[in-house]
Amino acid sequence: MWVSRISSFGAQAIKKLTQGVLGQGAYTPRNSYFHARACRGVQSSLRSLQMHRYLCTAIATDSRKDENKDQKTINVTFVETDGSEKHVKVPVGTSILEAAHSNDIELEGACEGSCACSTCHVIVMDMEYYSRLPDPSDEENDMLDLAFGLTETSRLGCQFEATPEIDGIRLALPVATRNFAVDGYKPKPH
Image (tube, rainbow, N blue to C red; front, top):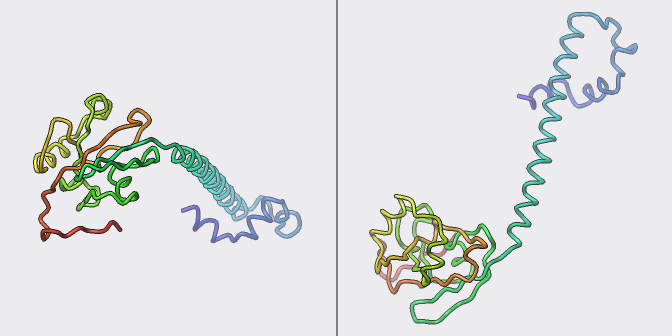
């Protein structure tokens, strides 16, 4: 709404009104009904513009905080199906599925992290770390029921994020997944 108000008056008219050029000879009937309405409209538009600038500044400030947050990393160890371990640094706030994909770890994630499959099933290898994770939702528990090789410390990699509390976590990948795609098909992340 503020965009249409600003564009209807034009940037030059708003600039002139804020500088006081209009009303000082260019538009003499200062007390007229139309002048009062135009000034109210411009004032409303200016308030909207100031609010927009404030929100943009606040969003930019918040995004800088997010950038600082993303710069912090934790250590995660993925134990692959052949027993080999891959140590990776994961930015705080990144899901385990995203971390696996960005580090070329064979964690499928067929539903792309929407909690609609169990192909990103991981096994937390230490109960201490498992207890630090937030409780799984009902949807996650329903999907975990479909997972191959389910254990007491199983979680879906798309449903929990890297936090400083789980720095040093070790996650085992199950030897198989239950996917309804053709056997051997491994989708590539987008």
